[in-house]
Length: 255
Ligand SMILES: *Cc1c(COP(=O)(O)O)cnc(C)c1O
Image (cartoon, rainbow, N blue to C red):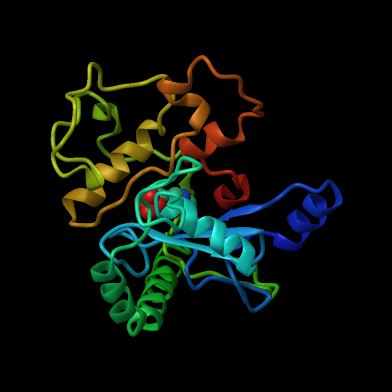
């Protein structure tokens, strides 16, 4: 979903802050007709298997001048200087895309528009089918005309007062199957709950949808709530936690 990019750029430019756009899932979304990933000094796209188009993995970095491109490619190609032997003046990485992956990507480009159209179609279905359901709020793009979302992801919130059948049993057992893209490589969790998680009715809804063959999952847990960053400082106001709980932030939906 595009954001108010011109506001961000205006502030960033005023204070000389370089903007790196994480447009990983934003491939094909536009703001005022300009594609995401092309607003900041650099933009990043993901071609992971779950994205709008895929090269099986990896992605793309977008930059606007030859100078940066040269330096980026140096870093992505082990920072090898032009000698007949390996000569490194800086630490480089092995980050370039293989020609096989790039070939897959070129093929994927031919279906990009239809993939985007399909995601937008699915979003419309959710908007239409859930419009009269009290307590569920499907997020949609502002209708002001500047925003053109690829709807890679359809999101919704659930009012905490809405009771979902089975929610008394939510989080009673630890998840044992594969989670998302982890392909079965998981630790067995110590407990079924953590100190920051979606509300019980949201979890019950996820389980019910799963039984109906519809994959759904909570949005991302905030970084400052990840145990690995528990000793890091965080500047927060509670909004990101409430988004993870997937609470309905629009009480008027209950009226
Ligand atoms: C998918 C995604 C990533 C990670 O991309 P990978 O190619 O899987 O590393 C990062 N940021 C956002 C916003 C994403 O959607």
